[in-house]
Image (cartoon, rainbow, N blue to C red):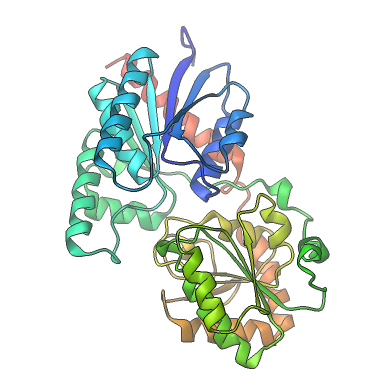
Length: 389
């Protein structure tokens, strides 16, 4: 498919924090054919992955101090204006937004600027059952409004696609399922236990349970601390590693102190060596309240880790209950304790789950090559159709 010039594509994401959506976006941009596409990335001023974005060949990075996580009416309006002006000044052909807030501001700016191709990736929906009803319906209305002028919406799980068709509405073929990708070469043969334990003074004989998550309500990290407290009663020697940081950091530290878990829990802060840390675990746990499809679950399974997770988003589409791990209801500490205890008691069961976990992920589906092929195919199809419209 030949075009007379490069296709200018603007990506918009609220913040380049160390999260799954951000890592997926940067992986996509790295792999993008720079002979065919001219990529720009518009994002907030700070973030742990800003330097990684700067290092991507061919990417023009735009940092905006007005694009922030919380709702800030004045800053939000200014961010909207700056995105709009950038689009108008740079002959942008495609706007592809990520994350809820940037997804709305970016799409509104693109619509106002007359962009023909507007794509959004929903890494989980902005509306969910843990919100107050008023908040829920406001976000649902905004998602419906933005979807009405979006050319396509990429979803990362079948559950999110079905939810969108049911709640957000619009044509079913507008929602495109494109799975997250993991770099299999990075994970293959990287299950060296000592590699992920030396720094924390842990031996190969120690039982280690871990979680990787932003310290925010969505991930419910306080439930991970409560789980550790209950497990301690029957398994006093088990260690818990919690990777991440965020607004709940003080509450987490206070609860660790209150429950006398200083000897059991290791807080690492944000880390770039997630593979190394995951490789030192015996069991991976995720306590989220809502999700799209957490990439860290894919990473844990690729490393051969049994997983105990809450049944949210698309996790059930990759984790095979009773074969690669266990699913429980969100905030059900008793069920989390029961399933984790079973795995801690039975090393043979952990090994069985570990083998199954690696085999459960189809490398043809959850691969960088597939994500790139599906996404660029969508770009080119929409661009070609826009030229003949």
